[in-house]
Image (cartoon, rainbow, N blue to C red; front, side):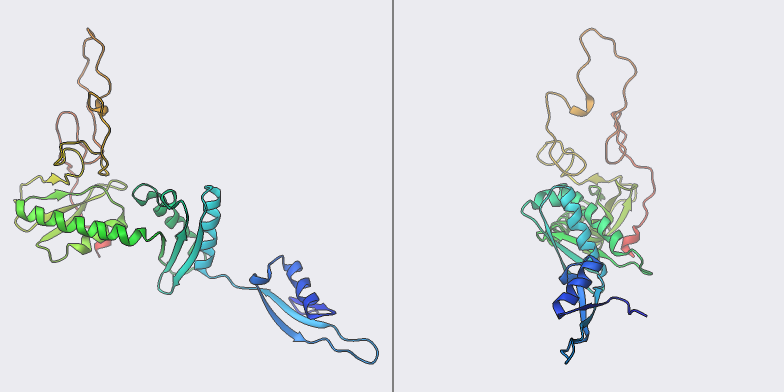
Length: 284
């Protein structure tokens, strides 16, 4: 009975190459064990016997290989390195076009991370967290969010008013929640994904206060208009959300209602989200 993954050859290298070709793997992917060395005899010789098997790939390596393949499909150069694989998996992407890998506010990087997490956890009984980073973006973003949270918390306490932040993903909301523990404020989350956002509530807030918005968005201190993510909006002569001015002489029909992107605002000036505030599960 032939042994599994055992290959013969006149020389050690010939036996190894036979195994690599049969398994269709490269030498770097193979584990090689010499079972019996070839020997010369008076009449002929015995052949080399080696066992060649494919190396087992770790969850992190499998995810990193997937990300590299994904970047190739996106026609973006990039190499992945697994820098940690203990309690959680951390994959670092190195690319000359890092802005394309990260995307606006990290949206592309978050999508890559979500897919990498799904690949890494195939066949696992318990979920293992996967973090994908590029050019140290995660730590820089965390520092930005912590500074923002501290600034807005001080403002909320000084004014005695609630302040609603821009919509954020669960990872970023966790950073805000943890940053404001013990800062004379509490944080609650409102809205539904993907527009779920945090409201900073100071201890001295009026219970009937409807709150104000983070002034990085619409109607900020500089008087400019911003979209819900805090980016400055390009404006023409009129607010672009209202559309073009009706042609001269045309009678107006029913008043149009224009819904905002953040708290359900309308052109009629209603700005209150009636959905009750609920704590984020990420606070737990």
